[in-house]
Length: 166
Image (cartoon, rainbow, N blue to C red; front, side):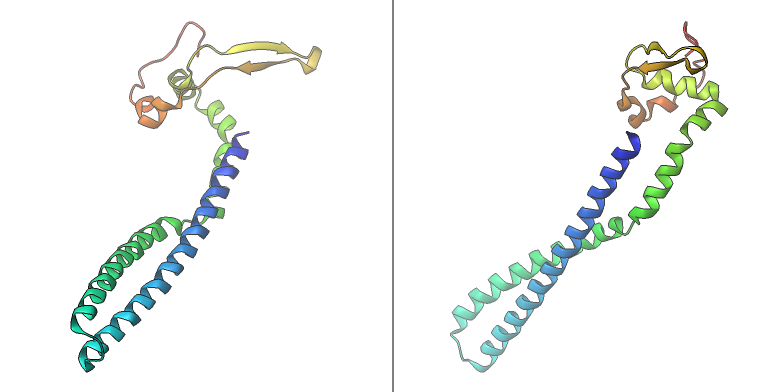
């Protein structure tokens, strides 16, 4: 389930990257067109082929549009820096980390218990399943990731055990 959520998030990121690239290309084409119109207006002003008042009005409008488009290009450049993150590399790293969670929790038992205490919203319910050698437990519980994301789950490392040992 967690890997599926990661895959979904990465697919969204990839789609956003493609949309940003396409939109930036559109803006750059429009910016080139605006610059061509500005050049023609300046030429018209220089040779006197159009009334100066009309040219000034159109020049102001084109300059304003150029300023807005330039700001958009700058914004997309910043987004491109973020978007250059390789989605496939992120996916590989996340898959590796997710697959190692059980091993990590087993190796770092004390820290794992502390982290679980911090993110559990309530008690964990255990339900026995199977029989004989196939016997085990099904776990149910709710997590509250808000404290973990806010960094609170890392602040108190002296908290060592509860009544259930978790």
